[in-house]
Length: 148
Image 1 (tube, rainbow, N blue to C red):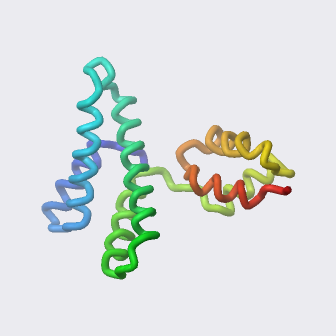
Image 2 (cartoon, rainbow, N blue to C red):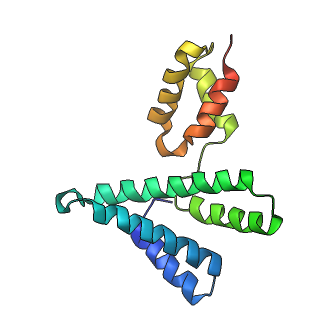
């Protein structure tokens, strides 16, 4: 799914109508953050590209914060909510490559991966696969492939 601020707003309104508290609350917070970032731009900077980039960066930030919270929280009820929120947020971004897909792409391009070409390997992934590669996952996979 392509990131679309108007769709996030429409989904938030529908979630409120459907009384889906988790989704409505999450999207309300997300919308507020996106609008705040957009309003902080001067008028000339408020372009469709800037809006798209702001939506992507806020979504990515929310997903990262959610992942960090899931690692910290031990309460199962709270974890259920965090997992639901993660699923809601991820639906607005392109599907992410799996660790296996990342590993296969890196090995095909860099048969012998060393610390020296770790940066270029991650750069290759970002350039070739763009938003479908989670940078943190890519780094973890690349590090696991390094031959000393």
